[in-house]
Image 1 (cartoon, rainbow, N blue to C red):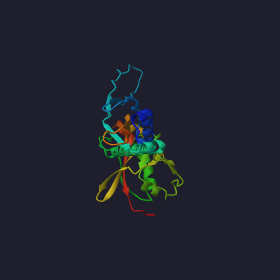
Image 2: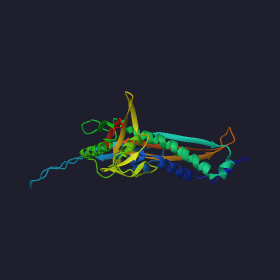
Image 3: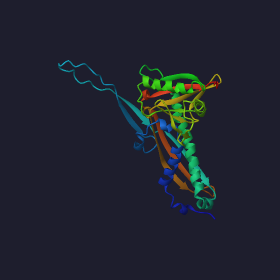
Image 4: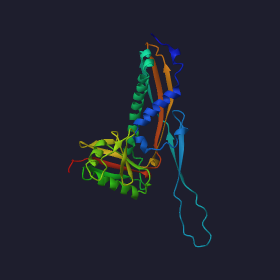
Length: 291
């Protein structure tokens, strides 16, 4: 039996949008490495958010005499542009089956959310190879490209924590996203907790080295170099990168050229490095698994 457009009168876009974002959040790992401070300010594709940061303030000696005139503070402005847009558009031909089995539509929206999350996760991870991460000397903040094995996997993360100290990163909120093979090597080190639980968002419960919370993802950025995959992992706090996303359209409709019912949705997002000082890019590759 054909089911017409009137049967979509109970379709609530906001509800489906919320379901989509729930599926998105469950799968995003690298979203744990960014802040959402400006997400509530975006409405549609092309929106921009001006982000101001205040420069350093001079501290001077006081000898009891008149003090200098107040210095004029310098500020730097970064623009977060909502310049990325992705959509999904799928149809279910047997609407009667879809209505009888609510899980079919829910699962379809979950798959749409997963596909979008994979794209966003990869986009955030790719920032590790960006030239936007520079220190005050204009040099990329790198922890070096290191061959990781069972013997040095743990110690290298301790060194990374020290590198963050030397870069004056806040101790609270430090994180790093590592590929699964790196976690596998850590598990063979007696100093690393082996009884852990990996959450859906990539956080490894109880897995902390120094001040760094460990996360895992298969989307860590990598580049082939002479046949070896060199990984570039984002490590640091969420203060370095601002990210904003919004599902701006969700619509159920009847395609004109076939007998089916369809749902389409539009996701817009923006991504920008706002304070590179709060990140150390960790470069490494998989070494021989020596014991």
